[in-house]
Image 1 (cartoon, helix red, strand yellow):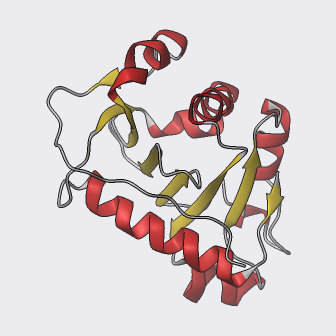
Image 2: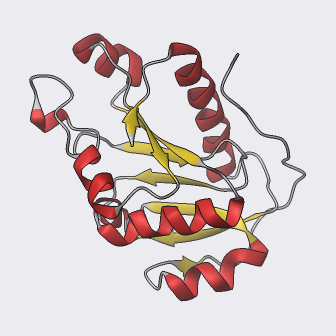
Length: 180
């Protein structure tokens, strides 16, 4: 795991994250199925295991963890000189994941990206899946969007996930890669 410092990569991931917010709010439709879970799971080893499962299923070598709120540019980048964006590699350990979420961004441990967030997004370059998390007093602030054919396998291996009935349809395709 590492902090992403490259502004073009940050901008690309931020743009994709904002597009996925429209999917999660159901303003845009998708072929993906939404699973729900308690957002506190984000800070547990089993969530790191889920990310490794998803990376394996999608064939991605990495995914990105991005804090969306507080504002990644006007708050986080101005305050700490870095973006609240982590690259999580396939094969990263649960321990490395938790250490990275709790890392002091620069003179303010309370602002670690795993602590100081109201909304965050986790997404791979392939766009085959994503997770949008919103801090919630309920147990449904975590939203994971995955291909329908993965649902049984993913829920079986991660029983804290719950299938949300229904779902929307579209032809969301494509992906993004690191800018040249």
